[in-house]
Length: 140
Ligand SMILES: [Zn+2]
Image (tube, rainbow, N blue to C red; front, side):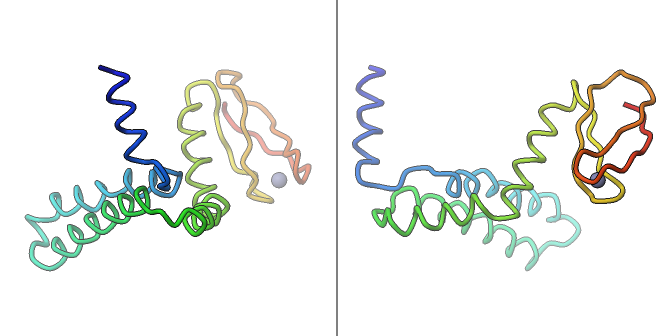
C-alpha cells in the first residue's frame, strides 16, 4: 500500500520540478496572509482582507505551479537565486537560532552586527567578537 502510494507520487512528479526550497517556502508562507485576513476581518474588513486572501492564494498556486512545472532549467535557476538571497539566508539563520534557543544565547556584536552564539547558563560573561575583536558583557 505504502509502495503503491509512493510510486504514484513518484510518477506524478516525473520530469517535473517537485518541491524545491522556493516552492516549499511559498507553500509554507501562504497561510500567513490567510490567517492575517481572518484576524483583520473584524477590524479592517472589505478590501484589505480580500487583498490578503488573494495573496495567500497566489502564494499557494505559485508553489503548486512551480512544483509541477516541467521547465526544470528555469525553476532551478530561480531556486538557486532564492537560496542565495539575503532574505532566505536570514530566514534560515533565524530558524536555526530559534531551534537552538534552549542551549545557546544569541547576541549581536555592537560593533560589526555579527551574530554570536554562547552556551546558556554561564552567567554574566565577557564576549569577544571573533569577527572584529571587540568585547562586551552579556548575561548568557
Ligand atoms: Zn564584531
